[in-house]
Image 1: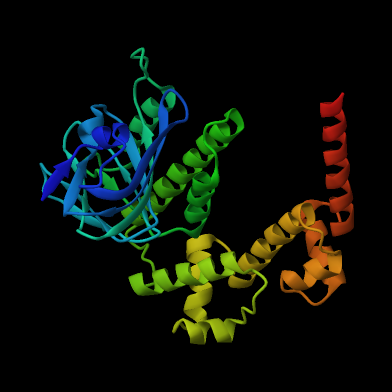
Image 2: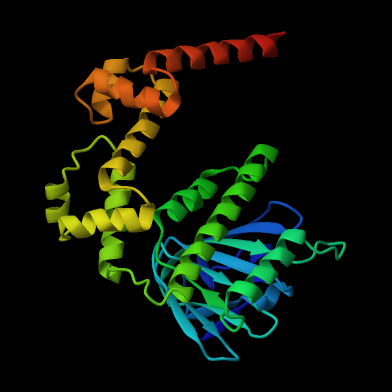
Length: 322
């Protein structure tokens, strides 16, 4: 197996002998870095996380093929499934490798929390995080993963879609990173400290729940009758409902409603569709019902929301011209 240095790849433009794709590093704060990996591995290879030469903590969200994470000193291996995430700590006591199989397609979002900045000043949040590890979690456990989370997937994909170089985007990325790590810690604590906690979903059922959520995300206005979806994805109705409660914290229908409202918000802002056309586009047949749930979510009816948004744009243009 060939080893390639992550730092070298970040600094080299042509790595066609090792990967086909890219690895991009985004400094967010003096202690926080977001790294995106999106590539196909040419040979069997691995990346050594400790090439960063720090005592940092890492969070990894896996969007692509299953990823094998291994430790060299303790000879541990864990497989990170698609849509699953993990926190990696204690690089001082072990070496961590991300292993890539030949022709595998990998897409990762990585958060790196550094303990020290360039002036060797320690980060207070990092110190508190280390204390939490020592007080709440077995310090020998360096790979901390919980069950796949739909909410984590939303946040991670939101970071991918951002520019990540402007101040507003970097502030949002910092907030999303904190949410991702906190969700993972909560899931891990549940499964690690509570012996009675056990997901009633198999790995294949979890992956099917993710596939259903992705279909809803792509087309929230589609027909998502529970019976039809259960039949299409070979999952029982009870497991479908359990999966959305366990992985997303909401019922199946509530998740659809949430996605439809987000889509309608976008259409009200960025399209010339009438309110009635938007109602049908996002999957509803009653304009009055749509207006009711929209107002409950946004505090305004769809008509009021669009009017306020148009007035906001006009005021913005006027201020720019003057």
